[in-house]
Amino acid sequence: MNTQAISDKEHKIRSRIISTLLVIGYCCLIMPIYAQSPKPVKTQARVDSDAVENLFFSALREKTVENNTQAADLFSKILTIDPANDASLYELANIKKQQNKFAEAQPLLEKAVAIKPDNEWYWSSLAEVYEKNNDIGKLENVFGQLIRLNPTRADYYFDKANAYFLGNKFDEALKVYDQLEQITGPSDDLILNRQKIYLKQGKVDKAAAGLEQMIVASPGQVKYYLLLAEIYVSNNAGDKAFKVLEKAKTVDPNNALVHLALADIYRERKDIDASFKELQSAFTNPDLSIDQKVRIVMGYFPKFNEPNVRSGALSSALELSRIIINIHPNEAKAYALYGDVLVQDEKYNEAKTAYERSIALNGQIYETREQLVRIELSNNDMDGVIRDGEVALSFFPNQGWMNYYVGTAWLQKKDYKKALSYLKNTTSLEFQDKELLSLSYSQLGDCYHAMQNNKSSDESYDKSLSYNPDNRYTLNNYAYYLSIRGEQLDKAAQMAKHANELEANNASFEDTYAWILFKQKNYKEAKAWMERALTDGKNKSAVQAEHYGDILFYLGDTDAAVQNWKKAKGYGANSPALDRKINEKKYSE
Image (cartoon, rainbow, N blue to C red; front, side):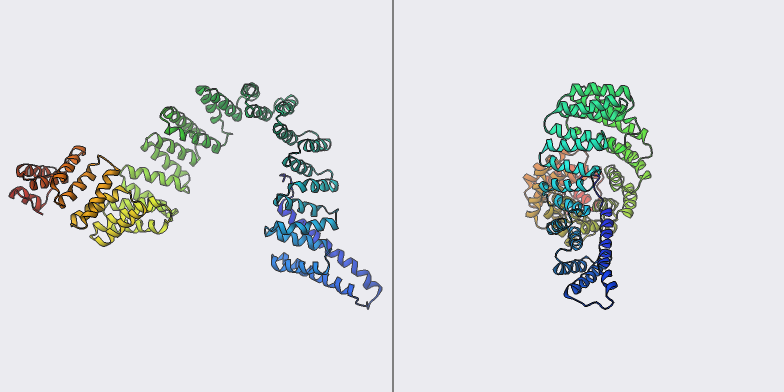
């Protein structure tokens, strides 16, 4: 219930003390009998008493070594002999509670308090059970009993009032707070709890009045101004909140929380410049935690996708991120955040520097290392990907994406064995991320193709498409390699066509489809697609020029064919087959 309630550790210690005292009590009851008669007659009652005593000691021993199952059995046996043994009821109930069997604990504790109504710990344990069982209505009586037993303990009053509050008995809760105030005097907790009730009742003025009194009594305490402003803001009284915060600002001009609250009000008023100035003032205060500052900046990220506000949001986020770095220069998360914002602003080189600084301060944050490697991959810095990626994997070996990045880099460097190693790691580590699995199997297909292992290559491409049938790069590469081998041309044509449907105006995809059509001897349509590729291609492609020449030759335009073969050679193509085409003026495999 209340934060002032008995802790679990304290509860366990007290329960053991009670258990020990109860055992001592049993011994005291037995001792006079020995004193009166050295050779007592063992009546049935005496046998039962001995049995209970022995069982209780045994149960406590089992409980001490945390053998709760055996302890519970022994306490249960005691209760078959002595159903009114309140200590065993209590101990057994506590074991049930540890096992989260609160419904079974409840009748045990209810019986215990009926037998010993003045035992405070029994009632306290029962309160916990009622709370866990959501039997809120019974809590009122429990805390009433606890107050009866310990009338100066403040947390019992708070708990009783809270039970009334949960039951929507607001006036009764307020009366309990009045009783407590007679004992402890006014306090922040009382004010806040009364406010909660007043606001629930819609009595905003009463809720505010208590805080206004506290401000009069302690005008230098800014927290009261902030609480009062929060009440006004929550009840659409922004103007009143603004006046309160302006007063707070005169009391403590550097208070970061006041500046943040004012920033919120200005933002509601659409005064973006004033709001940002208040944020700047708050961020320059080192007492405001970096985590809170980071959360505020992260709040800008959704706005980066809104064209109308993207520029302003980025500018604000960058400025606030720089302030965080200046105020918290030794915090890794400050540089990581700055890097994230720079990435959103497409300033990748600056972001890379920020991430490197963050990693130097704290290398145990995987996300920062991944961001660094992503930038290196996008910059085609394969050496950087391998260097930083392998370091990252030395700390985080089970990260699928990082294995994929490093494998991709080795593939680009044509070290296919190393590429296979990392890409296979990815597929063995990841089971849920279909995007990553599709990409990894696609890269495995490329590796196996380069190693002339066509069977494994085809299997990998098929696996890639099983995870993502729309992986356009898999569709294109798989189709192209099948066409080169002259195998499954219908399947290749279907995949190539689908790749072009997924991404129009891609010269490489168009060239693949044209070449498959050529292999199928559909020269007219092949010519149309190849001309698309030549139009959409940004670079002079030797492969496309040579393919175009091949198509033109079979369409009967030998001169144009030779001209394009020569272009291909001029663009850098160099093969015996191409030389034969030019020299013999005819197509050659």
